Length: 422
Image (tube, one colour):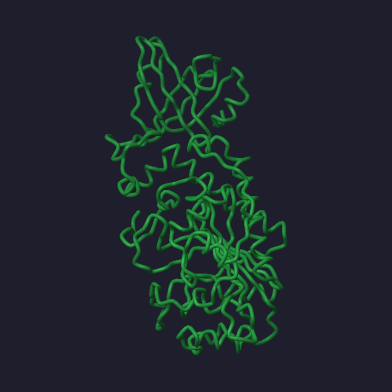
């Protein structure tokens, strides 16, 4: 007899013989009747046995034991899903040591740091599984959307010889006889591909060695990146708006049960476009300075159920590779933007500088040495069109979408300043 998944059994609702395998979710006893709730990745089903059943003693199982149950399906109004199993044979596949080191119930009181210490067990919780089922849909929808639009998926290297973005916060690595670093961004590589194959996309890990310890930052994260040739900030912002709408729509359609479990209500957002100056004035910020987290939240509260784009940022704030709005003069503003959603910045990007001489000039203006970026600059010397792109942090977007209190909830195995295991 082949193993059956609980979801399929409940959907068909037929009385028949079945074999199911999964984890013991709960047990209870009522007089001469024992109940066992069995869980697999698709749902839960009740197993029930009276005292004269040959498997009655085996119904007394510890939580999270892995078992197989073969028996007869019968309809029952009292059972979850309206159907239950009367066992003919119960086998223990693996016993869970007791007591469990963390509470794996749906209403766990275990603090997050300890849950992360035992993440392999925390992943047994339905709430935790719901987060990562939704995250899987997010990344799948991102990929679907851009593959349909003719983007080429690529895999950038994770070991690089120098900083991608001019920063110093890099993790060093020994690469044979050479010094190397863990990549902080796929920036250079996606630009190279956009300048040859026009449309590039990737989902890739990145590492940043900032010594922060906040609820919205990780030192290793996954980025969802795109880059397009023949594009400016207006074109690329529209691409971002459309993919967010597609992702949210897919999550609503494919993850109804998970959203209910997490008590999350979603609406497909619309795009709101404001210049940097308009936006900073609305939240009473100072021109020439970045938005504070409080100002980001305030701006989003002005435009609920929206992705708020703040574009045409000052060149003094944006990285050296963002195109100035006026190439002939000492441009104050750029073709760079940020995107805010549900109170938090989820993306930044814009049009890149594809003119080697201008790129050298902007590198020097930021107090950096063009020699350190020779291979980057040289990649634009042989027929590079204008191009633009952005990135979204997968964990950050998951946290924002699901109203999670800490980005570590949205990362299966977080890496931050203090955590290297599991």
